[in-house]
Length: 564
Picture 1 (spheres, rainbow, N blue to C red):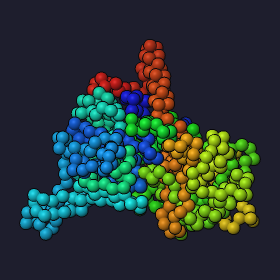
Picture 2: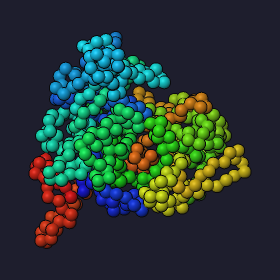
Picture 3: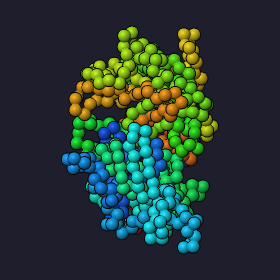
Picture 4: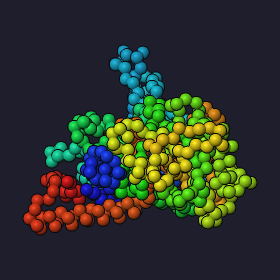
């Protein structure tokens, strides 16, 4: 069952049988999820976040490497603006908290001020207390490349996605556009509109570096630590009494990202669609290959960390299923600790959607260069990150990087990991990846790869980025410059062309090669909806009751919603 809400919002409900059929799994539960458009920034992707009453738009980078949502507020003077020319970098003006009737700034009271009342802690920030009239919760963040921000902890009513240029004020307007309607365990006397909820965030008062110069206004933290957007949504969901154990089919602990890439020469400030965010699960309607699951090896750290077991280069570009018969794979001859950039069985590489590029250990560069020369059949070739002129045909002859990740054992045991015989994203697929399991006396190191490990392809049109100002000039955005022992990062060019599921409840990260084209997705979902409506009409005309039809709630029905 699919509901097309508007040009930027889609809801789907799938039965367990439909999920099994779409993904090739042995077992699957019913799911409900909601999908909205992502837009392209300069190497990043962002979503609309509507904040306050009436709502004001703030565009925020989706960041699985941090936990806090933050954006500039009215006291952030000249934020997102060139200090000399006064040219605006950010898409939107600062959020004006004075114009929101639902805005709240967090206040606090330390133990030593107990004469004024009980201690009151900050939920996310640190308490700054002068007196009862002057106190607030301060927040700050600093990043490796030098960017930073400071903010005051605040909260307001928010909703993500929806119409790109129009804010929806009030419950009736939200219902009219279907925003949040139909989520969770809905009965006629228990409607649930979760999309507008109170979010704690950083109301920025100062930003520096890339936070000032970027296209997006702010950032949405989506890792697995306190304050993350999905976690606050989950807490809101539980406060309303909804529990997964009671059969609720919407699970806020899951979300997925699907990144497309549009030419950076376009006017990105106007809002160029380039993928989608799905809350509550993943959507097989996008998938070219079945979803396969890698282990999140250190969920207690709060990041989505995958363990690399091997790396290969395959000549002549292409996605997973594009390999021709007898295609040679060239292994990057390195141990697992060097592939992951640090020692330890639980070490791995962070999947960070808010970082544009991929950063791997410098100890890998020599082995990668050897495989790179073999894949190009050119002993003089040298892998580098300098600008280079390439034709489209040249790009097609660059190698695809194949990353082998540790599979998720629990998915295999529960039957949610597809069988390797039908999943090209698993090492054990019979028509692909056979060379990954072969050993050679020529290799200095050996990798313990098995058939249930996950294969992720990074084709050259994802790791080679074309210049915004000089068409035909490319730079490789996979860098081997992290010192051994530092945390390595898979950035957005690793996610590109996949729907990546971040499943916090199961401790896994899913990968499915996908088209990530939101316009195409809307067309396909609309076609399925029309087919469903025709089948229902045919059933009614034949005097048979519609299968599994639930009485429509009048409010939902009038807003364009039909439910099964």
